[in-house]
Length: 203
Image (cartoon, rainbow, N blue to C red; front, side, top):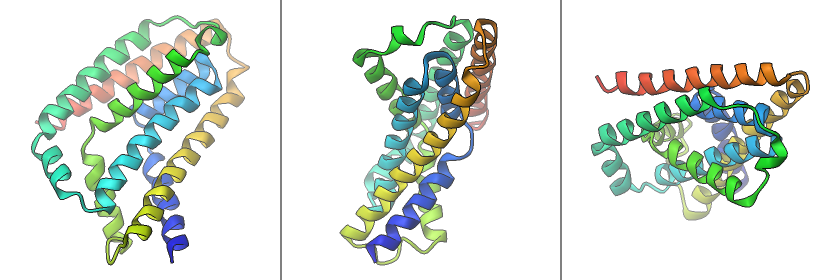
């Protein structure tokens, strides 16, 4: 029984991660300009946030979900501000030697900032609740079943970012410094647009 919940969780986690939003753009940009490992760290951060959201949805932590819902405007504003800042910094960034960025401090910062940025979109919780309900996964969830479900979500999300990272890596060797600069500019613009969309969604 738990194995079926695990498989369903993998499907849900993968499907929820597929839409390319600001985190996906960030993963692509980090992979192209800083190397595959840095892109994978971004994907791991996003998968961790998806895990936390799915835990709230699967275990029925209504107090947390209700609090996030009541504060969604402020949370979304914080997220939009971070996207503006990140987009501007990305747009102005210059491609560097990936070897200069392979250090534990930089990796930890990338991971934590991605987790935090992903968590500023509280609507993801309700997306997980809706998907779980649509698949009938919210009925009769015991502790082990819920644990298998959220573990699957984490695995599925990681699989998508691994797939995205691997695909982008194939093109990385073909880009010179000029191409990498354009990657930064395009990624910066897309991230800023994501911030604008976040603000407009509140109106």
